[in-house]
Image 1 (cartoon, rainbow, N blue to C red):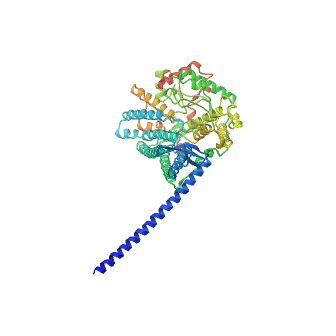
Image 2 (cartoon, rainbow, N blue to C red):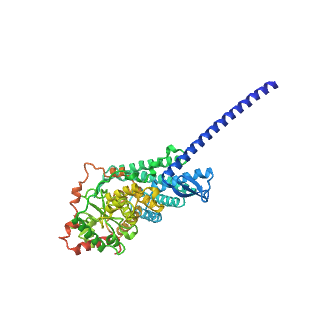
Image 3 (cartoon, rainbow, N blue to C red):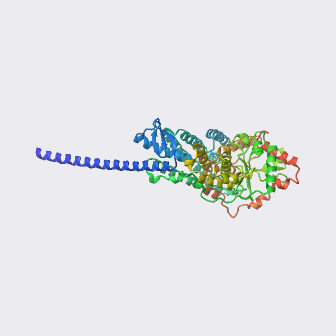
Length: 560
């Protein structure tokens, strides 16, 4: 009996040992495979950083390490420990992505100013909620602005800047965590807005015609759902980045680090401004300088007009699309101005309640219509970003005469005006003619920053938010004083939400936003209800035009 028990225990022991041995072999196999993958990843990151000519310092567990052409060393020139070297390569790669191709990056914005404006916007939204007459409308208005997303976005940009400046492993982890929170917030807010639009629409169609085409509740819902899909795709992109930095090189997309990838096409020529059009631009800017605040007037006296090749805000108007960038601070009034002409809506005999109010209470005969404000062009962020890219390109060219001199001359030869196609061609030439290895670190980083502006829709977002806060705060104050504004949920969601700009939408959702139906108001019919400064200048006294512009700014809450 004892022999039988002993025999059975031996079999169990042998079996256990065999299982243990097989497990050890399997674990060792997995470990070796993991090591092979990580070694291959090391080689991949090193080669990419070498190709980029990377010269920078990162911080791993408190130790500063230098990456020079894909090789890692300590500050005193000795070889780094393998584990630290591996981490340093990944941090350097992540840092390059944060600088050259950040997910939801908003370069050029002041994240702290943006965060402050978001908090003020939240207060405006809360005040608007209290003006609703039903719990359902109040709930819908609470989804009007993507507050959660914008708060997270400001924190994300601050994290991105901190990571780029420090290059530390701690800041890299904080940046990736902030990105995850921002993407989730964007998807949540876009879904909430879609539901709010569905509630306020309730089967009834509502639309308005702007200078950029018709917009309806239905097209806004379609655009919002497109933005939801966009956020889902960005979340997948962020997950692939995590896998890439974990060593799965098949999930890496090093082509996104190629700065000039956005400049592969020959630019479509921007329509040139004729002599008479130049004279009109000078008249318009002088008129605005005469009627705006002393702080804002330098925008018109010293600013350089920019001519866009195409415009989302002005697509129903004939080119050229001439704009001028405003400031981001509250006294900047608006972040971007159309200066090829000025559009007015006559108040005399108008059926519009607000125009009647302007005539009776402010003696305004002609109410100014700004084609590039968030309530007339909710997708203004596209034009604003392009204008900032052109301006930043021209400013870079002015500071660096040695870079792409032939294209620089063409860009700057017009003196008092910059053209989008000239700026694009300059960037294309500057990136091709200025190899990374032959530029100083400062020039290279400046050029990378300008190139990034050409591929981002969030440039100038802080100015948009400041403009919304100022305009909507004043609108609510006037409503309290008896000005007959429509503050209903339906009107606010359709005309005041600044979507898709506030959700950094892509081109697809903007196309969907302006999808036309057979019942849309024709642009020609819409424009016939307006008059322009060009039509008025020889008929209406100049003093009347100046009076109406100044009174309209006062009506908008601007202290002159």
